[in-house]
Length: 174
Image (cartoon, rainbow, N blue to C red; front, side, top):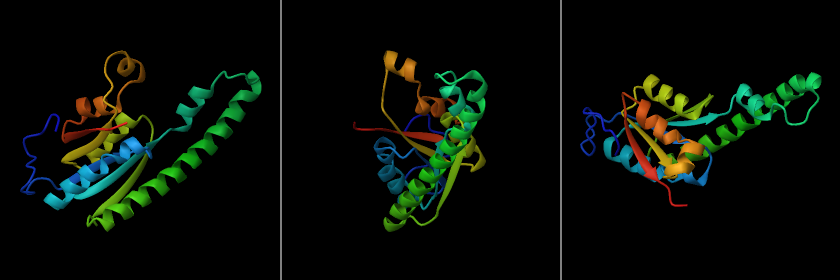
């Protein structure tokens, strides 16, 4: 557990009422599921499954200037971005439904799902605050040094900015 808040008491369940489990559809993110299940079963807490997808603006920024004619680029990029956002949302809905069913089969039945668009770190923190989460469970690659500086870390952002919830980092086996 990293940066635990004083109100969270693991084990007796009197204070842990809401768990946010972050997912992105990857095998790495799925490694956090057993930890959230164990915590939810021990405390009787509800679980909010969160997946963040890219916004149209993020997609357009990534694809800007990749060899398209300048005049046509805006419309083509906007159309492609809209299609990409729709596809990502559909994939996120499918992923969250699968995980929700998995949790139900393991005895965790108080589960809701949230799909957001934007920067994953910011959106996870926002959901944790909105849901008044007691614990955020997130898998991490455990990168350090230059690779972390270059790639950034959603987990690091959540740890530093989720001021109302404790954060449980699960170091993923790759």
